[in-house]
Image 1 (tube, rainbow, N blue to C red):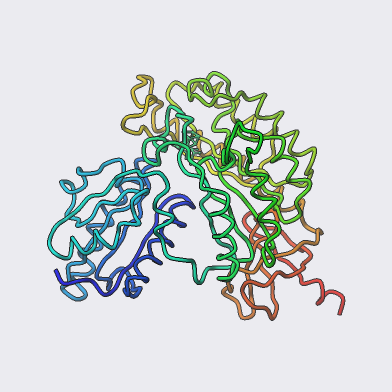
Image 2: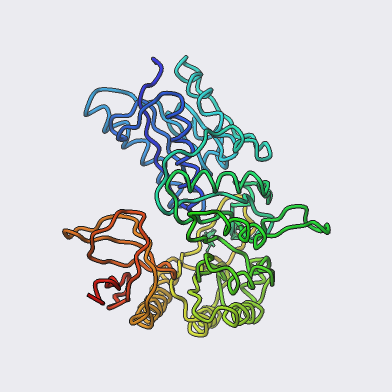
Length: 443
Ligand code: 5AD
Ligand code: SF4
């Protein structure tokens, strides 16, 4: 195989994968490769997700489709790299299931250029090492980014929820150093970011020198980032209820650039299920925590993750999830059918819930969550707020951006992507709102 000249990176799954995908693309570009569509690229990186079975299987169907599409169009055989969490979890096995050239884990992708060179010389190679944080230092500087950018500050998970593969694919909880994060945030702002979302599997577990007098937590980091000129908005995701410190709650009252939005997964509403999931919080402690957050920031938009059909979940226990949803009133949320993952404790529980029961529960839960999302959107009509413009819409002059509460807002106006526009929210649908620019209103 001759050395590749073009590349394509395709990311699946969570926002951290989107971040990793961007960094891999920057790495390939720094090697002199140019970006191309998947059907034309000499090397295609599939940055994969292992969280549920369906996500994992998608990799294999994608590899087949990619090969077929390229063969049909140009007769070429692309170099294929499987990156991300499937690479970490399945390792060598991927070579036996599919014809790929590279398998590279989420903590090793800074080695992609070497792996590509080896593969071009005819040696398929695997790198699933987990060196602590060395990848960040080996990645090129950020040059051009979207108005809303991601920044990984923490990786891994020590919580070991019994259904979850993340502690195995992303490794132990580890925090990037304060100074490196601030430097990257400044570089992101120089490269065009107006909003930064701090990412971590347990982002609110971010800490430096924990348990010492000079120890710092996520709220200290946010306070520093708030001082960066040109950075208008800060967000963070995903948080764990047990790492929600008073300092971070207070930051929602004290730091204006910290947006009024909190993604705080609960997974289920029954204490027995939460215990079987090893969630280490109860329904009540979760609800009391949200009360404390709402006390300091009454308008905060709450978001969550839910799993229906965890092994052994009864009808009555599922009703507890519905009543928790009613009690919270989420602005938005994600809900999933339980998917047994190899190697996790829950996968070997014998009482798996039948698929048809999971389907019905998911439908009922999603109906309740959609109802609440629409209600949240409707309740914001009449408010004035800023919208950060992220892209153009389908209609002429239409622009789409995000409100502080992470709602999609459509508006008409003469602005550039990246502008922050003052609007009045005028009408709400289930998934988006219409905004009217305030200057236009006054004229
Ligand atoms: N099955 C279904 N959903 C899962 N999640 C994690 N593991 C599983 C699983 N085995 C969900 C959780 C988590 C989100 C990222 O994915 O809700 O918060
Ligand atoms: Fe998975 Fe639980 Fe860790 Fe979240 S906290 S990544 S659900 S093990």
